[in-house]
Image (cartoon, rainbow, N blue to C red; front, side, top):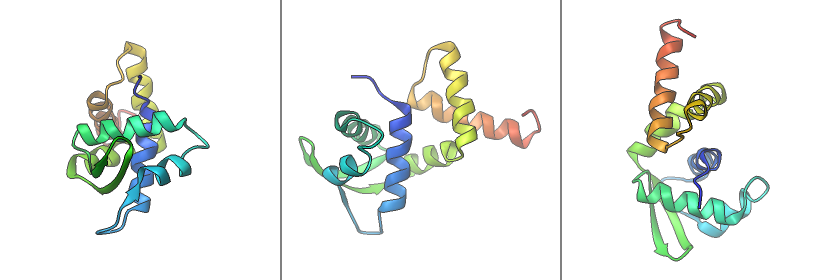
Length: 121
């Protein structure tokens, strides 16, 4: 499967908006609520990858799980890609070189923010 950075970003924004302290969101609910934009397999794969990367905490197995929390690295990623313009510029830069990894996306998005702060953009 291919990782879809747009889906990753949308899942993270969805979780940030929907999770409450001590609450949980089921994989079924995430898939249902984002199904107008992505295939369920892409959504579940994105959640799997977010968990493996240590950006979210979840419990359960084999697609039947609940997301419990966004972890500190996940919050850092969210802050770097929250602004649609920053995200678009970062993704565009990476597409030009053909390497859109999550780590690179976060790093380039942070560089875009830095460039804006210094007046380079």
